[in-house]
Amino acid sequence: MNKDGSKYYKLNLQNLVTGRQPTIEFRQHSATSSYDKISSWVRFCTRFVDNSARLAAPSNFSDSTSLSKQIDALFFYVVKDRALKDFYLARMHELGMSA
Image (cartoon, rainbow, N blue to C red; front, side, top):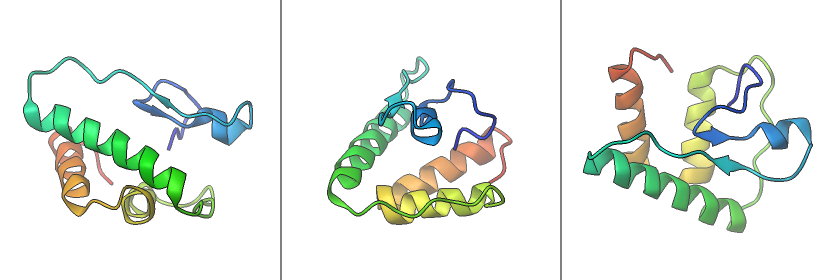
């Protein structure tokens, strides 16, 4: 998910990629008073941690796996929340990002 190798993402998985240490890092969400943004971020973090702890680890992606397929897999295998996936896809669209 950190395609450029940077750790400056809201969900930093770089330690897992490099093998430096077996940790993930949730970076602070940007300032907002939007209930939808706040509740979605909290739900995402909670579901990610809870489901990651109790479910089998998914297989790794190849370097050529598209962002769209990575997002689909993240929400299908780990987060398991269709409404949350729809929220983040809409946010990506609003921000001019393509999945």
